[in-house]
Length: 332
Image (cartoon, rainbow, N blue to C red):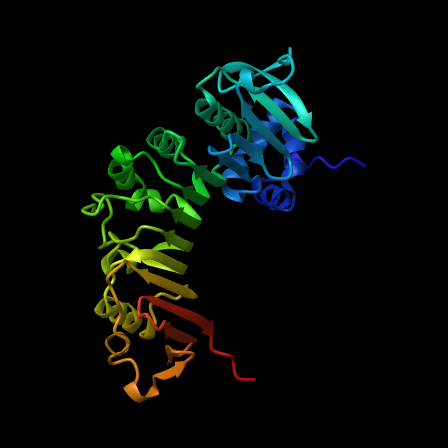
């Protein structure tokens, strides 16, 4: 018996589609233009189909469904495929390279443009409202790629930026370290971008609503002040080359103990060279000094609030601080 699922009212149809895998949805998209049009109306909300765009390794991967490798003719050991496919209005040779893997061939110097066009086609044809991951390497024209991300109208679960040429780093940082861009990422935000020593973000307001992520990782975070940190209600914050002070951390932990930052599970702060923490200053007003204990030369304390318990640790060199947080066990 055939069940006409697409004839269901919008609400139950949306629930049915949520239960399908990305592979099943992709197959349904191939049925007809009408079917694809119906499915696109629900995909932005359901976010079932996951697509990764890797500009470093030049591929676009629809998880569990299909992978498109972006190549140039010079990279092919065989004659180019006779079959072509249109991606965002451009016809390019496309051939099967393995199970659910296709090579797409673009003119020399257009691999970044090719990855963008393949992704644009998927966004349009599948109705994607969110990309699973975007990875940008130091070799990619990062400014161009990020402007494309901004203009694409989609959000990202995971964002990874390795770097860019030194002459472009601060202009790029103003884009990726803006409130608007942070809010485009819903899960993991990773940046290895090294900005100039005097950099300060122009488009990052600190008197705004909380930015919610699962993990924030900044490798060169000397620009990242306590005011920036207090904007994030994030599961994990990992900072390297930080210039946060003991007073900054005391302010943050005091707010945490008062019930703020409900999502935080882990902090890891690695200070810039020449900077150190004072554990007594960090914990002032939070716990009695005599409760500080020493374990393997680390200074350690336990912080509690009504619903959470955390362990704060400072290493012997006094330049690395970690804070592990867990829920308070419920009384039986």
